[in-house]
Image (cartoon, rainbow, N blue to C red; front, side):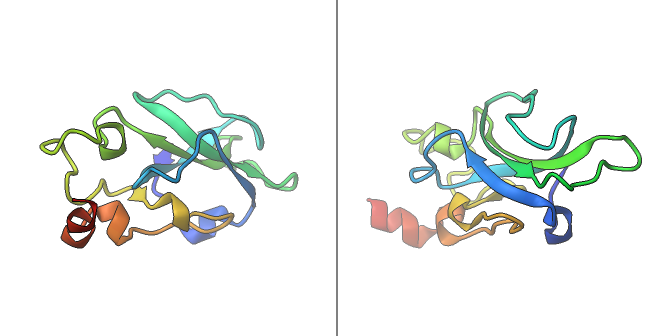
Length: 129
């Protein structure tokens, strides 16, 4: 399972764990994945890199359909803008993927949001020039 999380999906989160500093990342992609454990670094099977994940509370139940746990992962694909800061013609020069949010807006039980920074709007581009 890999889906865009909704607030109701996140009720059993206990913490957000970042594997790297997110200060310089305009956005991260987020997904709700089915995994075998409530805590710890989940197995990552996408291209790119895992940037962070959530841990669940000890009381978090397994999903009834699979017996797995639904946890968020935060990641970047190789072609994402934060991986290619010197490529003005790359994808997402302006805008960001559907599942991308500003990492500064992510919290326990909070999905995060798109911001001017994550969208690389004209105002942000002008300020960085």
